[in-house]
Image (cartoon, each protein chain N blue to C red):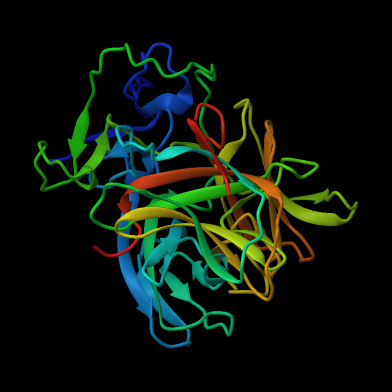
Length: 138
Length: 267
């Protein structure tokens, strides 16, 4: 058995998956609304120290799953003269980069530096969505 | 053609009559991002290789996670070397990619060649209201019990929220960038009243020819792409290129920033 709801103008009995708002044969991506800390939110990240060469974990939280979930993260530089350029991660400026990652236990914010230590002195706005669905096998 | 009779379900904590579009679980006036297939794949050697044959007969939207040192994230370098057409998802060998590397990918039931635009029914900025009684629905994937505690086993579940598609734009237009140069762009005008999340796809004339890539929103490498968000327009600029054969901009109902709980970190 399956459940589907067609988009306006389409007969649900004949509609293809693309012509449906929902079709239970094709699950949607989902974010758990009950998860704490929240799995869909914003992080205002103020970077005000010198970061050494290599990876530095800035923040980590346990996500509560026993597998690696998928994460989307879109990062904006709030100290730029315009706030209209956003990028799916990572944020990159010269030899400094910032990424949001997951493993089977935690969500991480990781700063990476190559070459020489960097003091970025910037504020970033990270919009993230931690999904129920897998970001890796398991 | 059927009659336009619809249904909508709000996320937990919201009255369905007053919930803004971004706080619905779904509305039958627009599609959710539906998963056709998901799997992991290891690129073992740096040669062109088919990752997955989907055979949908159209180029579908896709998303790739890259796993390095046990951690998963989107990786723009690898994204630029993975493309999709109407038959397959394919890796194109590149010296910029270190192999072996494992990816976890999603193919969605959404055609990158077909423009769609959903209506806007409510863009109020209603804040979450935990006093609302929580009635909801849940629909399992085939073969799973409705009492399953694993949310992955549900097609939709009102204890969750799902990316909702506001529009798919495929028209490529000539415009000028901030420097006054002529460029090609996909422009999705919207009246959402906030910066929405979006997926950008580009088919380059000279790079992964015939395949769409998930370009990221800003890349220095070819195809050089700038994605900009404005409260009334999302724009995907393909710079320093001849007119690309195809491009696609998927705009979600989901906002970048508004209506979201915020945490501040000083580090």
